[in-house]
Length: 114
Length: 116
Image (cartoon, rainbow over all chains, first blue to last red; front, side):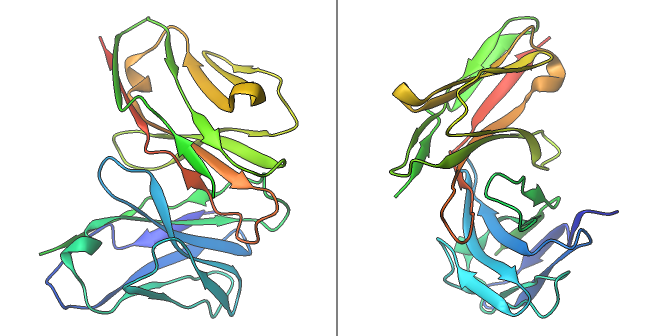
């Protein structure tokens, strides 16, 4: 049971480039999330999904897109990278049972946009 | 809107000292959950505890204890006899029970440095 996995661990992009951050979970969780963590700040929600085919915006969605074609995978797409997107990105998942259930986090992807 | 405030940005203590990390939250909901996460220097997020709004019992787990007081909207975290391995950033977070996303609203974190 690998839990939540994220690839890549590190990436440097040039302004205007595109990339996809991969996230997968093997716990059959319905809910999946993408957060970003800026230096000295807590995590902020970018997008979330309550199940395959269903996604919705979080607090800071601009500049990102997501899709959820399977229960396991929840990729995050950056179309035109900007320096403001330099951050650490965390993917998380949780079961459907209730709000008190723990969110399981991936190890993070550190992205730098130059 | 809900908000979590961790007023202490950084704390340094000498090993074996006790330390308390403060967390104050704001929410209009009557049902909610509070969490603490630890982020060690390696960067991953480690779940420590959750508490629902109807359970104000304090909790102790080894050297860790949590004090939840609805009257002051606080959920403070105490480490007793701190160790170097406790050095990390600690986040307090909140979930609204009625929200469809069940997203976590995080505080900005408190960086704890335990000096040997």
